[in-house]
Amino acid sequence: METKTRNIYLVPYMLWIVLFVIAPIVLIVYYSFFNVEGALTFDNYKKFFTPVYMKMTLSSFWYALLITIISLAIAYPTAYLLTKTKHKSLWLLLIILPSWINLLLKAYAFIGIFGTYGVVNAFLETVGIGNRQILFTDFSFVFVSVYIFIPFMILPIYNALEKMNPSLIYAARDLGASSMGTFRKVIFPLTIDGVKAGCIAVFIPALSLFMLTRLIAGNRVITLGTAIEQHFLVTQDWGMGATIAVFLIIIMVAVMMLMGLRKRGLDLVKR
Image (cartoon, rainbow, N blue to C red):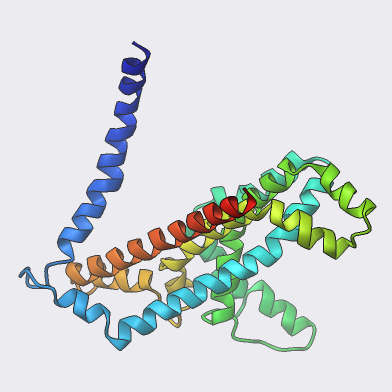
Protein backbone atom coordinates (compact mmCIF):
# COMPACT_ATOMS: atom_id res chain seq x y z
CA MET A 1 0.00 0.00 0.00
CA GLU A 2 2.80 2.40 0.92
CA THR A 3 4.61 1.54 -2.33
CA LYS A 4 1.50 2.34 -4.39
CA THR A 5 1.01 5.66 -2.59
CA ARG A 6 4.65 6.56 -3.17
CA ASN A 7 4.33 5.69 -6.87
CA ILE A 8 1.24 7.93 -7.19
CA TYR A 9 3.19 10.85 -5.73
CA LEU A 10 5.93 10.23 -8.30
CA VAL A 11 3.55 10.69 -11.26
CA PRO A 12 3.53 14.56 -11.28
CA TYR A 13 7.31 14.59 -10.92
CA MET A 14 7.80 12.14 -13.80
CA LEU A 15 5.36 14.10 -16.00
CA TRP A 16 7.29 17.30 -15.28
CA ILE A 17 10.60 15.61 -16.19
CA VAL A 18 9.20 14.15 -19.41
CA LEU A 19 7.46 17.35 -20.58
CA PHE A 20 10.05 19.96 -19.59
CA VAL A 21 13.37 18.06 -19.65
CA ILE A 22 13.29 14.99 -21.88
CA ALA A 23 10.88 16.30 -24.58
CA PRO A 24 12.84 19.57 -25.21
CA ILE A 25 16.12 17.63 -25.48
CA VAL A 26 14.54 15.17 -27.93
CA LEU A 27 13.26 18.09 -30.04
CA ILE A 28 16.69 19.74 -30.06
CA VAL A 29 18.35 16.50 -31.19
CA TYR A 30 15.63 16.04 -33.86
CA TYR A 31 16.07 19.53 -35.33
CA SER A 32 19.86 19.17 -35.34
CA PHE A 33 19.59 16.72 -38.28
CA PHE A 34 17.94 19.25 -40.61
CA ASN A 35 19.52 22.04 -42.65
CA VAL A 36 18.07 25.49 -43.31
CA GLU A 37 15.99 24.13 -46.24
CA GLY A 38 14.48 21.43 -44.02
CA ALA A 39 16.37 18.52 -45.60
CA LEU A 40 17.75 15.66 -43.51
CA THR A 41 21.54 15.99 -43.19
CA PHE A 42 24.60 15.39 -41.02
CA ASP A 43 26.35 18.51 -42.30
CA ASN A 44 25.50 20.48 -39.15
CA TYR A 45 27.64 18.14 -37.06
CA LYS A 46 30.50 18.35 -39.60
CA LYS A 47 30.25 22.15 -39.60
CA PHE A 48 30.51 22.29 -35.81
CA PHE A 49 34.06 20.88 -35.99
CA THR A 50 35.27 23.63 -38.31
CA PRO A 51 37.74 26.25 -36.95
CA VAL A 52 35.03 28.90 -36.53
CA TYR A 53 32.94 26.87 -34.09
CA MET A 54 35.96 25.31 -32.39
CA LYS A 55 37.29 28.81 -31.67
CA MET A 56 33.86 29.80 -30.37
CA THR A 57 33.80 26.73 -28.09
CA LEU A 58 37.26 27.54 -26.69
CA SER A 59 36.19 31.16 -26.17
CA SER A 60 33.09 30.01 -24.27
CA PHE A 61 35.21 27.72 -22.08
CA TRP A 62 37.74 30.47 -21.41
CA TYR A 63 35.21 33.06 -20.32
CA ALA A 64 33.18 30.54 -18.28
CA LEU A 65 36.37 29.37 -16.53
CA LEU A 66 37.52 32.95 -15.89
CA ILE A 67 34.12 33.93 -14.45
CA THR A 68 34.12 30.81 -12.25
CA ILE A 69 37.65 31.38 -10.91
CA ILE A 70 37.03 35.06 -10.10
CA SER A 71 33.68 34.20 -8.48
CA LEU A 72 35.36 31.52 -6.35
CA ALA A 73 38.19 33.86 -5.33
CA ILE A 74 35.66 36.43 -4.09
CA ALA A 75 33.00 34.04 -2.79
CA TYR A 76 35.13 31.83 -0.54
CA PRO A 77 36.46 34.57 1.79
CA THR A 78 33.03 36.24 1.70
CA ALA A 79 31.32 33.02 2.75
CA TYR A 80 33.93 32.49 5.47
CA LEU A 81 33.38 35.99 6.86
CA LEU A 82 29.62 35.42 6.81
CA THR A 83 30.02 32.46 9.16
CA LYS A 84 31.81 34.72 11.65
CA THR A 85 29.48 37.72 11.59
CA LYS A 86 26.31 38.50 13.51
CA HIS A 87 22.95 38.82 11.72
CA LYS A 88 23.89 36.12 9.19
CA SER A 89 20.36 35.92 7.85
CA LEU A 90 20.33 39.63 7.02
CA TRP A 91 23.65 39.46 5.18
CA LEU A 92 22.56 36.38 3.28
CA LEU A 93 19.35 38.14 2.27
CA LEU A 94 21.37 41.10 0.97
CA ILE A 95 23.50 38.72 -1.10
CA ILE A 96 20.52 36.79 -2.47
CA LEU A 97 18.35 39.87 -3.14
CA PRO A 98 20.05 40.95 -6.42
CA SER A 99 19.36 37.48 -7.89
CA TRP A 100 15.61 38.19 -7.60
CA ILE A 101 15.92 41.13 -9.99
CA ASN A 102 15.40 40.43 -13.69
CA LEU A 103 18.65 39.86 -15.60
CA LEU A 104 17.68 42.35 -18.31
CA LEU A 105 17.10 45.09 -15.73
CA LYS A 106 20.51 44.45 -14.17
CA ALA A 107 22.17 44.54 -17.58
CA TYR A 108 20.60 47.91 -18.41
CA ALA A 109 21.60 49.22 -14.98
CA PHE A 110 25.24 48.39 -15.71
CA ILE A 111 24.96 50.01 -19.14
CA GLY A 112 24.12 53.21 -17.27
CA ILE A 113 26.90 52.68 -14.72
CA PHE A 114 29.67 51.86 -17.23
CA GLY A 115 28.45 54.14 -20.05
CA THR A 116 30.23 57.23 -21.35
CA TYR A 117 28.23 59.48 -19.02
CA GLY A 118 27.82 56.88 -16.29
CA VAL A 119 28.81 56.90 -12.63
CA VAL A 120 32.20 55.24 -13.16
CA ASN A 121 33.32 57.66 -15.88
CA ALA A 122 32.04 60.60 -13.84
CA PHE A 123 34.25 59.42 -10.96
CA LEU A 124 37.26 58.97 -13.28
CA GLU A 125 36.75 62.50 -14.58
CA THR A 126 36.62 63.82 -11.00
CA VAL A 127 39.92 62.20 -9.98
CA GLY A 128 41.62 63.41 -13.16
CA ILE A 129 41.97 60.11 -15.02
CA GLY A 130 39.55 61.14 -17.74
CA ASN A 131 36.81 59.40 -19.70
CA ARG A 132 37.47 55.74 -20.53
CA GLN A 133 35.78 53.13 -22.69
CA ILE A 134 34.54 50.67 -20.06
CA LEU A 135 31.32 49.42 -21.62
CA PHE A 136 31.62 46.94 -24.53
CA THR A 137 34.91 45.50 -23.25
CA ASP A 138 35.98 42.12 -21.90
CA PHE A 139 36.37 43.71 -18.46
CA SER A 140 32.75 44.91 -18.31
CA PHE A 141 31.47 41.54 -19.53
CA VAL A 142 33.42 39.55 -16.93
CA PHE A 143 32.63 42.05 -14.14
CA VAL A 144 28.86 41.97 -14.75
CA SER A 145 28.86 38.19 -15.19
CA VAL A 146 30.67 37.71 -11.87
CA TYR A 147 28.24 40.10 -10.17
CA ILE A 148 25.27 38.11 -11.48
CA PHE A 149 26.61 34.63 -10.68
CA ILE A 150 28.44 35.23 -7.40
CA PRO A 151 25.43 34.53 -5.11
CA PHE A 152 25.27 31.02 -6.59
CA MET A 153 28.90 30.50 -5.59
CA ILE A 154 28.61 31.99 -2.10
CA LEU A 155 25.56 30.00 -0.91
CA PRO A 156 26.87 26.40 -1.33
CA ILE A 157 30.27 27.37 0.12
CA TYR A 158 28.58 29.09 3.06
CA ASN A 159 26.43 25.97 3.70
CA ALA A 160 29.53 23.75 3.62
CA LEU A 161 31.37 26.04 6.06
CA GLU A 162 28.37 26.13 8.40
CA LYS A 163 28.17 22.33 8.50
CA MET A 164 31.86 21.95 9.30
CA ASN A 165 32.70 20.94 12.87
CA PRO A 166 34.66 23.88 14.42
CA SER A 167 36.40 21.54 16.86
CA LEU A 168 38.46 20.20 13.94
CA ILE A 169 39.90 23.70 13.37
CA TYR A 170 40.67 24.10 17.08
CA ALA A 171 42.37 20.69 17.09
CA ALA A 172 44.54 21.64 14.10
CA ARG A 173 45.59 24.89 15.78
CA ASP A 174 46.36 23.06 19.06
CA LEU A 175 48.58 20.67 17.11
CA GLY A 176 50.63 23.61 15.84
CA ALA A 177 49.16 24.16 12.38
CA SER A 178 49.40 27.70 11.02
CA SER A 179 46.35 29.56 9.72
CA MET A 180 47.30 28.74 6.13
CA GLY A 181 48.08 25.13 7.02
CA THR A 182 44.70 24.78 8.76
CA PHE A 183 42.97 26.18 5.70
CA ARG A 184 44.83 23.92 3.25
CA LYS A 185 44.57 20.67 5.23
CA VAL A 186 41.34 21.05 7.20
CA ILE A 187 38.95 23.80 6.08
CA PHE A 188 39.25 23.60 2.29
CA PRO A 189 39.13 19.75 2.01
CA LEU A 190 36.04 19.65 4.26
CA THR A 191 34.25 22.28 2.16
CA ILE A 192 35.28 20.95 -1.26
CA ASP A 193 31.75 19.69 -1.99
CA GLY A 194 30.40 23.21 -1.53
CA VAL A 195 33.13 24.56 -3.83
CA LYS A 196 32.24 21.97 -6.49
CA ALA A 197 28.54 22.78 -6.24
CA GLY A 198 29.27 26.50 -6.56
CA CYS A 199 31.60 25.98 -9.52
CA ILE A 200 28.98 23.91 -11.35
CA ALA A 201 26.26 26.48 -10.56
CA VAL A 202 28.43 29.23 -12.10
CA PHE A 203 30.37 27.47 -14.88
CA ILE A 204 27.41 25.81 -16.63
CA PRO A 205 25.20 28.92 -17.08
CA ALA A 206 28.29 31.06 -17.84
CA LEU A 207 29.10 28.65 -20.68
CA SER A 208 25.87 29.54 -22.49
CA LEU A 209 25.60 33.29 -21.84
CA PHE A 210 24.14 35.29 -24.72
CA MET A 211 22.27 38.36 -23.43
CA LEU A 212 25.26 39.92 -21.69
CA THR A 213 27.47 39.34 -24.73
CA ARG A 214 25.20 41.70 -26.67
CA LEU A 215 24.24 44.31 -24.08
CA ILE A 216 27.45 44.54 -22.03
CA ALA A 217 30.18 43.23 -24.36
CA GLY A 218 28.67 44.70 -27.54
CA ASN A 219 29.22 41.41 -29.44
CA ARG A 220 32.98 41.63 -28.77
CA VAL A 221 32.57 38.36 -26.86
CA ILE A 222 31.12 35.51 -28.93
CA THR A 223 30.06 32.37 -27.08
CA LEU A 224 28.08 29.23 -27.94
CA GLY A 225 25.01 30.83 -26.40
CA THR A 226 25.40 33.82 -28.73
CA ALA A 227 25.73 31.50 -31.74
CA ILE A 228 22.56 29.59 -30.76
CA GLU A 229 20.60 32.83 -30.46
CA GLN A 230 21.98 34.04 -33.80
CA HIS A 231 21.00 30.87 -35.65
CA PHE A 232 17.51 30.64 -34.16
CA LEU A 233 16.52 34.32 -34.32
CA VAL A 234 18.60 35.89 -37.12
CA THR A 235 19.72 33.35 -39.73
CA GLN A 236 16.72 31.06 -39.05
CA ASP A 237 19.05 28.06 -39.33
CA TRP A 238 17.39 26.07 -36.56
CA GLY A 239 19.33 22.94 -37.45
CA MET A 240 22.73 24.51 -36.77
CA GLY A 241 21.42 26.23 -33.65
CA ALA A 242 20.08 22.91 -32.37
CA THR A 243 23.39 21.19 -33.17
CA ILE A 244 25.34 23.72 -31.09
CA ALA A 245 22.77 23.24 -28.30
CA VAL A 246 23.30 19.44 -28.46
CA PHE A 247 27.05 19.85 -27.97
CA LEU A 248 26.44 22.39 -25.22
CA ILE A 249 24.23 19.86 -23.39
CA ILE A 250 26.89 17.16 -23.84
CA ILE A 251 29.57 19.48 -22.41
CA MET A 252 27.38 20.38 -19.43
CA VAL A 253 26.59 16.74 -18.67
CA ALA A 254 30.29 15.83 -19.02
CA VAL A 255 31.28 18.56 -16.54
CA MET A 256 28.68 17.35 -14.02
CA MET A 257 29.73 13.72 -14.47
CA LEU A 258 33.40 14.65 -14.07
CA MET A 259 32.63 16.36 -10.77
CA GLY A 260 30.61 13.34 -9.64
CA LEU A 261 33.32 10.86 -10.64
CA ARG A 262 35.98 12.88 -8.82
CA LYS A 263 33.79 12.95 -5.71
CA ARG A 264 33.30 9.17 -5.83
CA GLY A 265 37.03 8.71 -6.39
CA LEU A 266 37.82 10.78 -3.30
CA ASP A 267 35.27 8.81 -1.26
CA LEU A 268 36.92 5.53 -2.31
CA VAL A 269 40.36 6.87 -1.34
CA LYS A 270 39.02 7.91 2.09
CA ARG A 271 37.61 4.43 2.67
